[in-house]
Length: 260
Image (cartoon, rainbow, N blue to C red; front, side, top):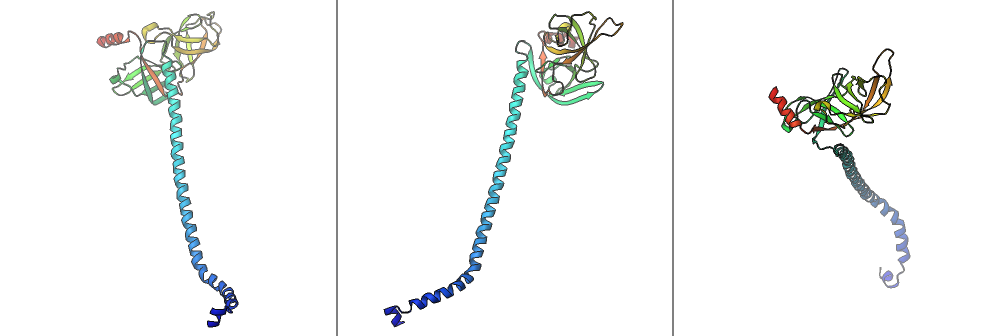
């Protein structure tokens, strides 16, 4: 040791011994290093899994908000169209939402979320953004039943917008068809003519779209033409409707109630 300390003759020996011992050191430390590597790997994996789960939840939340935003956009668009449909008229209006639909062959009814608390009354006209839906058939404090124009028992006084020719549009029991009554075979009617409410009977305000003539049939021996009309209102799609209070309807409703 004294000779090595002063002259360094054992450096080569120490280097050789270190080289021989190194594999043993590596073998001894291998379990410890492997344990540390596995611990770091598991920790990193858990962190990645947790982060992935958090990102997945955030993505689902964002997608949910995006879908809700798209729904609100569509709803706002429908409401703007609904309100815009009465921009040229001066009736009092109220927006109502559909609660239930009953579309049997002999009965076409929908239920809405407005009733006597909002001043709804039987016989009140109901429209959507495209045209006439029907009229109030039954009313309760919190909801009302609407009789659709396609119901076989429903009838609307109408006129052809092009020439003012008057007729009655009655329901056929089909979801997409009305029938014009009392039109002679020589009447000035054409496929595509717009049919609007005439205002006669003081039930439906004048000028609301009811439908378009879809087909004209002349039956032999009959003095009247069979005229099929496609409704303007989106009877199968509307989620919101407008309740109308035509001018003078409040007084008429009061008189009706007093009479009853």
